[in-house]
Length: 457
Image (cartoon, rainbow, N blue to C red):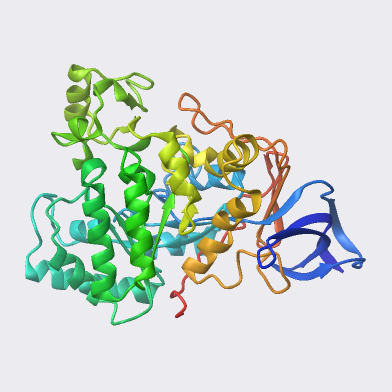
């Protein structure tokens, strides 16, 4: 007997690029049958007219400060991910971890999580661990040696690779990056990087990330491409990446579907010259936390908050949506969210990214096909991460599934209400059990820590 049987399932076949209607049988945590006229099941879900998709895989999120229940839950971020159909997410991005790898993964092992979690080890986190408290200074050789030891320890703990946040640490030079990468001892792990600079320096930054991949021989994931060059430079940046791929460089990118980025106002992102680079004014910045939540900046308020509340999350409306769409359509770009919340405050991308692409860009604007969008949310990130048992509805795959109505799915999160769940998602199944049914969370502890190396090609 199956644990769950999904009948009248409209399933995507990524080989033929078509949909087929079938029955999906789940037992324990695995898809064990995909066919017709399957046997009895404890739970039967009639998915007639709905899409039965692999659970969405978000290759770029920012994990919680684990164990922090000041807002009433350990998983302020992953809870929102789950509601929009994400079943697996990757933390430790942009060079940052919010606690040690061991603490984070062990907590999930002991307590479960709303989603399955993988993580990078972040370079800026390593810099802080060895005592570098000045983001504008380069590391000493002794500090680099200490960081390399920490990388080796993190690999043993199960990280999938190293992430860099170059814009956040302007003092990091190319040699430091290459030395840190050498600590992997040729293990086939993944690199990811938040570029060194955006807008008119974005192309230069993309060339640097390509050169890192060439020099190290390691695959590189360019983080949130939209916030790098969706300021008039997207076409050129896509051409540069595509040319590198033609030359054999293992490089891909990801992008979230918004024209605004979000980070902390005290970061180096907002150093002098940023508004000139973006061709924007202070009122392009919206403050996302108390005591100024929802306000747009003027010059006085911007510098006041930057000085007095440097860790405040803000949103910067500096990108062009048509260029963001152009990035998402590129064949080497996965859909992501870059989700980050603190006590429920932040950018709506953490609750709306995947439904927004499916509702607005696929159904309403017809900018890309439903199959193409689903591939960018499932199979592409699964392949990039070496998750051979995820990303497809096939026998033997992990039973991470999202069932949604392609005619009604829509994001509801806004910049004023950034965690409002989407509409149109009927079920989210994590590791073979129902986690969400009709926007009601039934079980938010089904996710697991995934400790692994990236598979060799």
